[in-house]
Length: 180
Picture 1 (cartoon, helix red, strand yellow):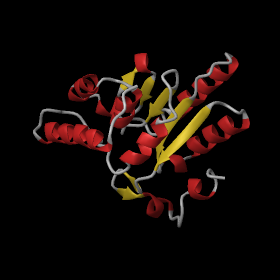
Picture 2 (cartoon, rainbow, N blue to C red):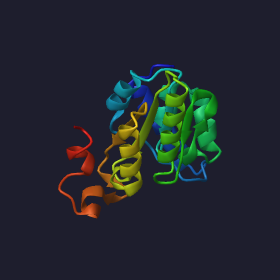
Picture 3 (cartoon, one colour):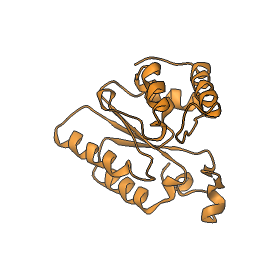
Picture 4 (cartoon, rainbow, N blue to C red):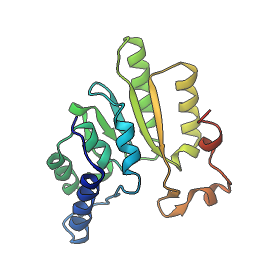
């Protein structure tokens, strides 16, 4: 896998933003910025044989997993920004909220049954982490000791809405439960 610096990741997203703002990209684009050092740190653990699953904000995951930047950009230019999938690199994303969760569980079951060394890294947003689907998938993974790691990327928003305000919470569930 290729190593990226924070600046390189930001430069990639800035390029995509320019393409979108110029009208070249005709489909939705969810840019990723603000926690570059954290995601680079997580990818320090991820190996080539591991799976990376994510939601619609997946540009960095694709790049950090080793998908060539020109291939990622081409897919974005074709309107696939919110559903980037590169099976040859073991990267899948979904624009459907919680859509990637059962796939992560299924891959975890398959890895465990086959005694594989593969791990599954499933990136979700803070709003997704508050859903019943997340709770059920998290519980199943934990109780069946599956090789799945959920990474909650908390930007404090669900699209344009404050997540805590939406759920009328002082703190999100993962802040008190999942970190134990």
